[in-house]
Length: 178
Image (cartoon, rainbow, N blue to C red; front, side, top):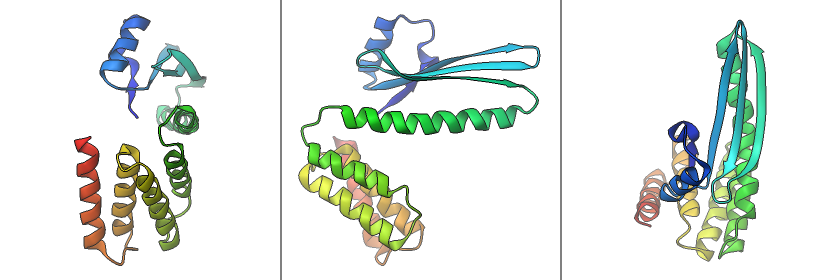
């Protein structure tokens, strides 16, 4: 899934944005505005489904400019949390040729929210491997399994670090070749 920030689409019509979304193969874009008056700042942000040009989420942020870094952290955190929920919901609602594979991917993503441990890495790997058994061409399955394998190595919980890295490299090559 690709997400495009609308700054690259400023001043364009909806039809142009939709055509751009198709040419960039993005399914969503984030757009917004910032207004400042004296010591106040007003930020609007909205997530748009590029395929149907529909708003999925929007939020307004108002604050004083006393600590811009705290404001930036708050906005970034709230947008990231909202985007995560909306993107997962939107992805789950999209039609797929392999719904069981998607189910394993979503379960693997949920398992990734747990603290890192040998057991949690094993659970994620198992779920992404099941997804790939059902849909060997799944870009998300390949990339997420590669990510989990490399994270397991970097976390020091892999019993076969060279094998994990070799497998991850192969998965990345497959994903990029698609």
